Image 1 (cartoon, rainbow, N blue to C red):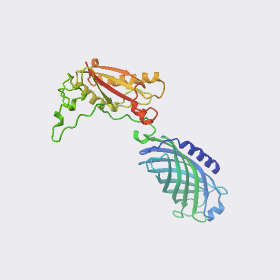
Image 2 (cartoon, rainbow, N blue to C red):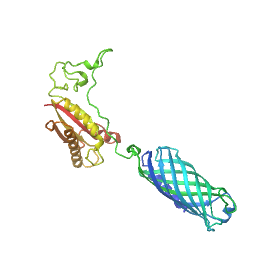
Image 3 (spheres, helix red, strand yellow):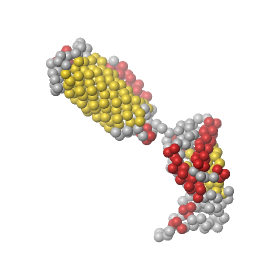
Image 4 (spheres, rainbow, N blue to C red):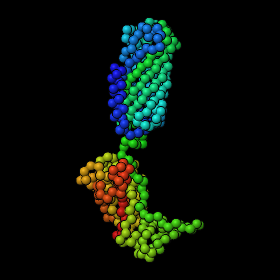
Amino acid sequence: MFKKMVAVLALTAAFAQSASAYDLSHKFGLGISGGYSIPVFGNPFNSSADADINYGVYGRYHFNDSFNLEFGVSRSEFDKTDVRFDNINLLGVWRLAGSSDITPIAGLGVAGTRIKNFTPKSMKLSGLARLGVEFGITQWFSVGLLADYQYVSKLMGDMPNTKAHVVTPQLALTWYFGGSDNSASAYKEAEPAPMKEEVKEAPKAAALVDESQLDSDDDGVKDPEDRCPSTPIGSKVNSIGCSVEEKATMTINVEFGSGKSTLAPKYNDHMKEVATFLKKYSEVNVQIEGYTDNTGSEKKNIALSQARANAVMNALVKQGVAKSRLTAKGFGPADPIADNSTAEGRQTNRRVVAVLSSK
């Protein structure tokens, strides 16, 4: 059995090398464990009992990426005797490498140990210690190779002959749920870059000058409201400082689920801010443009980007922007602004932008 556990560990380690770091903060975990309970240290109990199976179930709560509290029940059976230990365990466990997917762990705790098939029957107080390694296979599942040490004291009743020392190597499988969206950030699609307006920075004003009143290109539009600050001096422009030939672009900070085009309610406030801005400049038309990275077929990406652009446009209409001013178009993976061969580049290319132009 122990050799099989080592083989499973080796396979798990090889697979886990490809996983990314993840944060279990505020997640719950449910797990099962199995191994062998081995009496040690040459005490009288060891002379009358031999190693046999151990199994249990447990629940965890991770307070942060480094510490969790584990509550569980387990049973230790021993060969050459009918005596067994039924345990109720409580451990504090530290992940020594924090949110790394491969981390050494250490734990300390206590247990109430009910000794069965021994007269007189009694509940003992046990001390627990744990060392091991855990492997995060996905954001929802981990495998651990653990070694627990249990000291069953004489407190709270008699032991057979003496106190007992038991070491239990075991394999533990844990399933996770709950937690915040950020607790598995390395496994989910990266969030888009914050909303920003892609314009050139206006010239810096001299000290003590009220920058809110500057009109650097002398087009009649103050710099804070000028979306085309490079317009030639004296040019005829619209209310956002752009000539008929020019367009201003701003990124809309929304994120869609993988392969989805439904706009989540959490973006309502952001869409309201965008709508307020667009209603302020009613003299311009707005085209909502959706883009994707190059993952998947171009046909599906174009359709997906069109559906997402439509969702944003409809949200702006609900916020009071006149539909006659709006159009929506999906461009799929066209016009990448970053390198699609990197995760960061693909994140940047997944975007929704509003293009403002004169009517």
